[in-house]
Length: 127
Figure 1: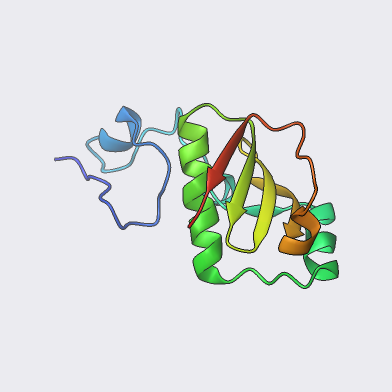
Figure 2: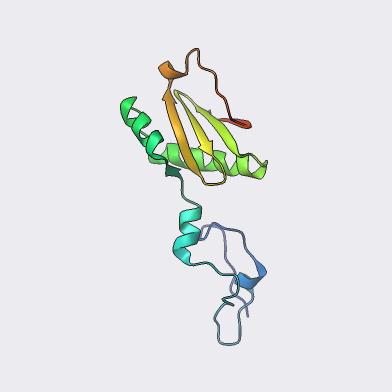
């Protein structure tokens, strides 16, 4: 009998055959498994030092709901093969490194005016 990972469980990575196939003792194969902390860290949204400073300087506060929207936008960008993405929300813009799931910089609506965004290969607009 094999245990299945279902939607809603904490693990958010891809389901691989090694995770589904259990040995007779009930333990998963250790050949390709990563430590849980590594899996969790790989799927969390991170802020670079620069982005943290910009958020503080510009008085931008990211709420839990906004963080979830950004994570969803990152997932969509990653699915399309994006590397550096501009995420536009109501009153802010974020430049995000998709692979590392890291916010590189952040701007409020005032900072966005008359600005040119460079070194991006995609944009995700969150309504």
